[in-house]
Every structure is written in C-alpha cells, then in structure tokens.
Length: 540
Image (cartoon, rainbow, N blue to C red; front, side, top):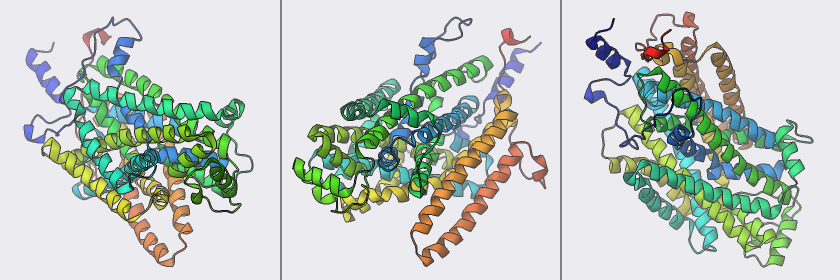
C-alpha cells in the first residue's frame, strides 16, 4: 500500500516540468487557466465540457484562414475551377491529424513543442531549429500584415498607402494582444468574432456569385483533375503548402495548456485529448467551408476569363482599377488585391468592400496568432525571462520590419506577388515542425501510455514524408522558374546544408520510432517517463 509520502513523490515525478524554479518555462497567455466542469463520470459526452475546451482549436484554425491561404484559394479557383477542391479537403484532413499530435503533446507533457525541443536536442541543432521556425513565422507574418495593408488600401479606395496600412496593423495588433488581460475567454471570444466576420464576408460572396452546387460537390469528392497540366499541379502543391503551416504545430501544442487539467490523472488526460480533438475537428470544418467559399466564387466567376474580358468589364463598370489588366488574351492572374477589384467590377462595389472586410479579419486574426506563435517559440527554445511587453515587441519587430521595408519600396501590384516566395519559404520549414512532433509523440519515455502506437507511427511517418516531399517539389519548381545560374549554385549549397539537417532530425525520429540499431554509440538519450497515474477506480 502506498504511503502519503510515496504518493507525493509519485506526483512530483509525474510532472514534466522541473521543480527547480529557475528551470520553469516562461509562459504567456496562461496567467489564468480555464476550469473544467465536473460531470457525471458515466456520461460519454458532455456539451459543458466541450464548451470548456473550446477555444484553442479555433485559434489554431485561424492559420488555415490567413491571407496566404485565401490567395491560394482564389488562385486555385481561377486556374483550375472546382477541380482542386478535393486537394483542399485532403490537406485539411491531414492538417487535423497533425494538429491532433500537437495537442496530445501539450496535454500529456504539460510542455509545448518548443519547450520539448529545448530539453531534448543538443544546443547547436536546437538553435538551428529555432532559426528555421522563426523564418517560417516571419514569412507567415509578412503575408498576414500585407493582407491587412491591402484590405485598408481597398477600403479607403487607395487613400491609405501600404506602408500606412502596415503601421496601423502593428498598432492594433499590440492593442488586441492585451485583450487577454481582461480574461482568456474574452480573448478567445474575440477570435471567434473575427472568424464569424470571415464566414459572413466570404459567405456573402458565395451567395452573390451562386456557384454550381453540383460542380462544388463533384470537385470536393471526386479526386481527379481532368485536363490539368503543370499550372494546376503547381497550384495543388501550393494548396498543401499554404494549409499545413509549421509554426501552427508549435502554436497548438502551447494553446492547449490553457485548460486546468490534472496530468496526474490518466482519465482527465484522456478526456482532454478527446474533447480537444472534437473541438479541432469542428474548427477546421468551419475553416474548410470558408476556404471552399473563396475557391468556388473564383471558380464560378473567373475560371477561364482573360485579361481583356476583365479589363473591358472594369471599364464598363467605371472601376478606377481597369489598368491592372493588360489588353491581351492571356488567362487572368489574380491575387487578393486583384481579387477584390474583379469582384467589384463584376458584382458591384459592395462585393469589393465586403471582400476587403473579410481579408482584414483574416489578416488581423492571423497576425495576432502569429505573434503568439513567435512568443511561444522564442520562449520555449531560448527560455527567455523578459517582461511581456518586451517579448511582444521583439517578436513583432522581427516579423514586421521586413514587411514595412517592402511596403515602403513596393506598390500594391508588386507586393502581393511576394506570396509565392513566402509560401516557398514556409514550405521549406515544414519538416522542422513535422519531424519533431512525430519524434516526441512516439516516445514512450515522454508520452507513456499516450505515445503513438505502431499504426500511428507508420501512417504518421508516411504522411509526413509525403507532405515534405510535396513541399520540396514546390520549392524545386520555384527555384527552376527563376532561370538564374548563380541562384542555382547558391540553392545547391543551401540544399546540402538543409538536407543534412533534415537527415539529422530524421535520425532522431527513427530512433524514437523504435529503430534502435541506428543509435550506434548510444548517444541519443531521452528523459525518464512522465508518469500519468490511473485513478483507483480504473485499476482492474
């Protein structure tokens, strides 16, 4: 029989966070924890508990609705019509499975992915990993801030220049980020409000354009692309790259720490995993519908249209933006700026302004979650012990300053063209989130009974291998399109270093998956198990 001292010792051992206060990870967003209501233990499902766990999944889902995703959606519709909707569906399902791993890591260990990386990888790989993730966050933030600046430009009919839109976005991001001082649930409600604005805005465009519902369903559930060529293939790859974002894995593993869960109670941990998965499924289903709205609008209205057709329509409608479309018969190329313009030309000014409101909500919400990602990643990898304001200022400056410089020296037509480069940048960083999350969720020494089983290890490994291969293909296509010998040589050198580091991470991952023969010198060591005690009533 256990003595009281034994139980206390077991409880201390079960905590994955060191008892040494100097080693406690710094946290933001968690100054309060949301309590979980007690319900009848015999109930398989409780709406009260689901509501208590609702929040982190919706914040995570905002990354699936950022301006980069919206631009990928509209380009998909304009280039391939409804034919790539099934790719969007598959990418969203893959994203859900990966987010499940991230949430489980945070719930079971009480640490988010950056903190786990800090404690498991040696110093040099850890710093390289941090730098790679920071690059992904910078690329994502640039898309988000550019999206906000374009929205301000459209709403003001060009009176607010891009650099001013960037400055406004910086200011209001700082203001909104301190909403959590008024309560965590209020902050989550504000994000829910922004998602609602996106749903209403893009939903209005969907109803106004009235796409063929049969074609929408056919494109969604028939995995085939009739008559598709290289352009459609690249767009399909771009969809996967835009949907599955590396920093979002780090973000979600941190957000789930905001609920008051006793990690020493196996039943509570299992229940938290269940409700977080349900909440994430609902959140990503809503984000998927919003993405479908955008794809379907541009597939119905602008698939196969030429620049000359659109230019003539804009002239007839009296639009001041008709000069955006050259008088030729080339297929229309759109981005989030031109997308709003052509909607205004074909469906009236209301369609343009409502589009801009949706883009503003997408950019503002994703900029805020991007800031949280930056804070979690920097604090986790570097264990920073700064004031909240200093941390926000640093993480914002790293991401915003490059965007501001670009906005000052570029006009809106050229600025949105950076989207392809930024998607490539994020695609390159994807292995630095997917490989670590599979590694650590497969470790029995870290996850105990909640470690990935054999099926999850195999399917997760194949899934991540496939996603990384798709994104590397996207990068290769982009580099070859540059048609510059010097860039080819530079890319080859970078590729060698890049692939070498990925192989290092894969080596660690394979050992975690059980291929112990690769640990030649016994140099890969992991900490003792995180014990999750079962309740007495579960012992049988």
